[in-house]
Length: 98
Image (cartoon, rainbow, N blue to C red; front, side, top):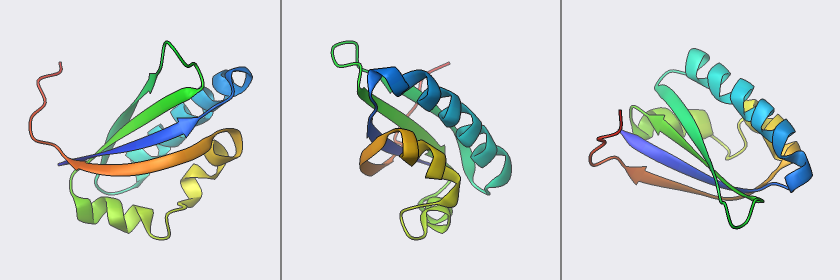
């Protein structure tokens, strides 16, 4: 398993729209893209424009097949609302969340 952390800059006035677009996008990816296992969103309490979305994938190969040219069509709407600052892949070592 891997986790992919996407770091975004989202203007505070655009956050509600970004969250709505992210919800539709992540659910669509989870339902239609092989290997996609869902995602969650985090927002900094100190800097409301800093947003992380963390996706879970069954393998690096599945994510790479989705990522292709670093601009998957499924994420176009999110990129129109927020600025994607970085994408970092991590191996999932353990997860004790419930």
